[in-house]
Length: 83
Length: 259
Image (cartoon, helix red, strand yellow):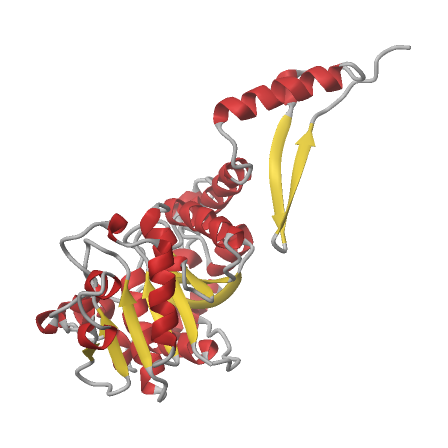
């Protein structure tokens, strides 16, 4: 179908919706409060920074679900410390 | 073996009551005995969509509180001899009954019916807990909009927590908008929610007309939404019914230009 947005090089709003939902649901599914999530992030950052050089802002926490099972995923770029 | 199915969604206004009225009607028309239970205490509407609003004497709260028997409160449908409505109270609130009482009511209804279809209120509070208390399975209704899908995800999580298996209906899908990239498709929604798809109801103005008249749209087999509800009914009965491509009904020129 003809789409003005597509002609203008903008993303379809359907894919915007899907991406936004996937992001927000990965947070919703953790089922903990924003404050708890913040403090979990800080604690994880403290632990990981004992071993790697990490930036707290780059630490991503999400819950992935597949076939009714959930997994906590913590993702962060690391720099190896000079030994 | 009787089966109890709760129709739920989280968000309001996505089509729970319409789905309850249509699936109950369709199941009854296959010869099964069906009772449609309005569990939305205080916001009575299922009676309106089934066209039975003028026949109510007793309601669900009266039955639970022992003020009458279930048989006294149930209203026989105008068209189908196998279909009954258990209306809810318009004056009480969700806390008028407990999940245990609702569970007990569903157990009692199992003795007389093949299918107990429960219309759940919006929200995740006591009304939701009441409505799912006696349910063997859940049908989660959503529309392809961000707010409805997010709420459906929450509901699916809560149903899992209560060990109630759920299947999804994507309601009010506009194929035209999906094709122009302005609406999430049923595949998108299923992908996000990671749940089994029971059916898709295309956007259809006949649903409003049927609501106006109190005649479930499934009785109008020429309507797209009615045909979609019939397919869902057959899937509930265990038939394997293919999902049609709603795009096929579009005009020749539109299809030509899409190539």
